Image (cartoon, rainbow over the protein chains, first blue to last red):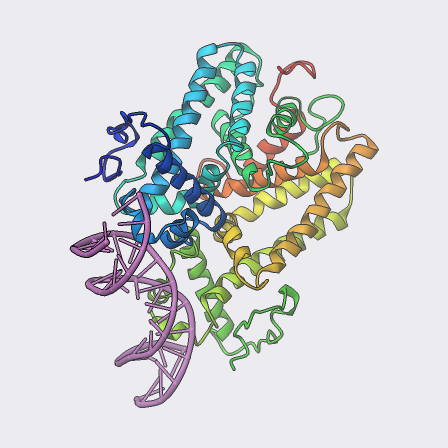
Length: 229
Length: 229
DNA sequence: GTCTATAACCGGATAGAC
DNA sequence: GTCTATCCGGTTATAGAC
């Protein structure tokens, strides 16, 4: 069996690339070819949805026939698996780096917001797939995509810890619910992939600063607690 | 042809129920039956996604066979069409009512936020379908779902007008981008359907007030412009 | 590494009996 | 209004030639 094939099953993200001691072959390595195929598939999954994208379409996009795809991948699922894992590994790594740098909770949170928005551009397709097809992929028999939940839980702990730390040390107002606040921040970042355009009026950095401004200082002018309700 | 069937095509939402002069039949009217089927289908669409839900599953849920469904509906698409239209008609009507009451822009915006969150409970399935399958449905040939865009555009104009009015009259800070701000508010509301549970710790009213607090006053303690960055 | 050919299956939709 | 029976096309995946 081709060692690069993802046999999936019960193994989570950590076990995935045991064959990943990829020799750097002369040029146009097999792993580059594979990554290219994954990228093509990701774009199609993002545009049409995972289920609505056929392996034939992926193959046509790559200039081969559908049967040939199975030389590279076990199944259609293993392709989307690789799309999502690549994104999550990168994101979690970046969050860890932000936390490792330390600092005031409010600064750390702002930096995490910037990290999230910054991921929209390089991982646009993967984020879209995660947004649209997360429910479906999780519902598949077996826990092939259980690592999605594991990664989400780790990220949630990171955010909530900073929010609570900010409340304890005084930078964050104590009367907000940490978990609810985390969810709203998270959702606001990732759902932006629906309207964000790389060539649009605002880049992800500008969007991040705009959101950080509203998130910390609010929309209202004048004194606090002057909002209606 | 059965007048209750939605032949879809180019007609938008307003033209839909020309046959809707439903006689109130004795009991368990045909329209009630139909609405029940739509509701069952909506739950399945929300849980598994539109494409992953088969007409056979919908039929089984209703205790009939798949062929029998076609006595009530033209197609699977016409079912999801009805799910979304019912929701959008209700939502747009409620927004219009809020605007008709008038008031300070900040009060109006807060009331619109409350209106959105309040819709999560009665329209949970429809909102989920809109979130997950909007892209796919829009991509279908023909503009069968063009009314989705029309309704979204009307709602966008409503929000942005209030934000701009607030900036002009002084209640909303002038240095935020109205369109960007609208998108973030909109997304924060609707994406909450992913984690909102009707029997959970917080009801939609509490979630709305929590969000309104952060949205207008911000997360930070102390003076303005003290945020990092 | 790709192609040809095809297996095995499942999807939406229809026609007509009852 | 529902059932029976079925059509027809599309889907993933496989086997073996080149």
